[in-house]
Image 1 (tube, rainbow, N blue to C red):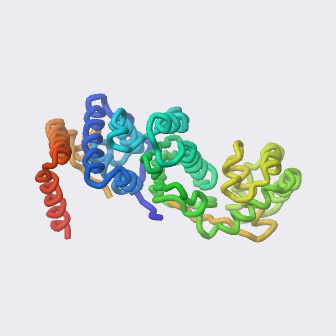
Image 2 (cartoon, rainbow, N blue to C red):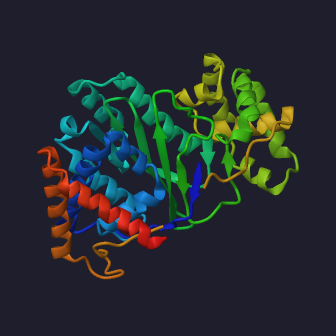
Length: 363
């Protein structure tokens, strides 16, 4: 897993209608080109790369230094693919805020309408678990508010989701690249893109947290009164500062009701804990801290946390969006894709030569 350093301040707003319409058209042309050349799985691979994603947003003309690049680029992609799913073999669900909560329904609708190699339920599970991991198993101070789920007929998938820290006024982006047998609770991310590493983090999907995950699963099957008693005991102890902060907002009585659910389910693994409805960050954190206090099994406190301009930016940085150049880029890509469909590879070969020349010029 890579860690990016692309800070995303919480500003930027929405793209004006004339620009968003062009973003959709350019996104469609770029996706068609990638699918024609390399297939739909390549789109997922690129979206999971935070540097490519950031550059993609900048090519579309959005602010490179804004959290809005995530929501707007994903929104343009979703609109670009809409109605073309059968041709492209690529599907998009979710989005920002309330739209993100409709992701399972949108995935199910695609699965019902199109023939997929995996059951729609598996993709819904992948969507829900990726969101649960970044909101519950990784506690870094950023609340998830955007979740976009991309997938192919073959069952490959990618997630681009974003969380915000309202105190810092910054956002961080979480990238996933998955497959039907994806490991959700051990180093599951393709990358986490952030402005800085946080000092107070509980990371229960770190590789070094395996013992903590196993112990938490055992503790989740304990009687809820025993667990709430251990929480009260921790709160009475003088702990190191970061541990004292981690236990300060735990409420034993409220958590006891949640632990009644885990006691009834008796989960056999940490992943099964996350599957239980109602088990949130505080319950998972309590289990991790009790595991350390009783069994000496520490959790991980490691924070799991390149740009380009082609058409300018909507905020005028480094220059205002050049509409004529923007439209010309869309036209060139469209003509290239249409030529490739007709068996004419000259334009595709020309773009390959241009890319090779560009790469050589940077060496």
